[in-house]
Image (tube, rainbow, N blue to C red; front, side, top):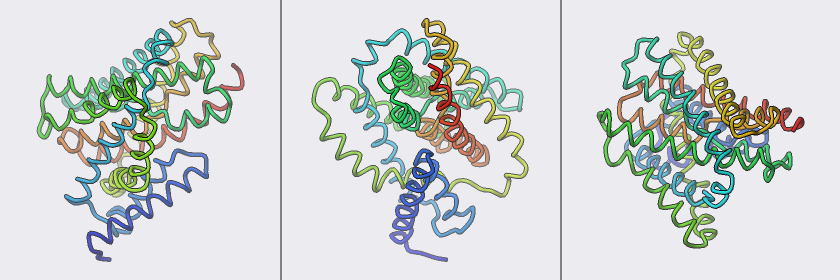
Length: 323
């Protein structure tokens, strides 16, 4: 089936939006459905849409808008009020996956600089699905909710700083000033949040993003995934999924305990930090574009990120009942 570029873009947006809504109805993050949409309509299955320069360019703009809106939504005041709990949770929630994923990658035979990037990808946290669970459980304003939200914000900042540090230390084909743009636009958004009322800006940005650029970005990630090698990498995917869940759960939990949260609350915080989602996808995409991550490994990582996004609310909901 051969379609014009415009036709492919229209199909990509419409199908991705539909799958996102289906995913939401099933109680999952919209991003899960959007990723699956890209896999289904892309080269892996139906081959209706293929990646190209226009799709990639729009996808990159989508990343920048996503990071800008994340910055706009960053409440530095709230973060400051719960800095101890959030910072210890974030730091341990970054250190544990960063170290263990890097070690595993080295054991698997990857060069040190590539192994470190694996760690950076899985050091990130996505808060969107966790916010939904906390909200429906009426825990968004609780100690657990505030610590998780603050830690997730710090995690995102740390992940972006790690990418920037990686650029400075290791360089890399395709890495450069453009790689730092997500960090820059995130900081611009966060600064605007502090100095002005960003409600209108955020609303406009989200409308544009939600209906066009975000579906293109998340859908385009699915276009890069090949299912042909899945039978050879299923064991790796299982191991990485267990590692993704365990490193965040225990790392963040240890940090929360160091911040004097009780055991039940610390477990809930750990579960709330498991989901990777958008930020991990952004970092992984940077690695793919810079030829740090091969396409087959990128596909495996995306599947692991999806699994973490599905598992997180399943663990978090019952734990919230015990705090």
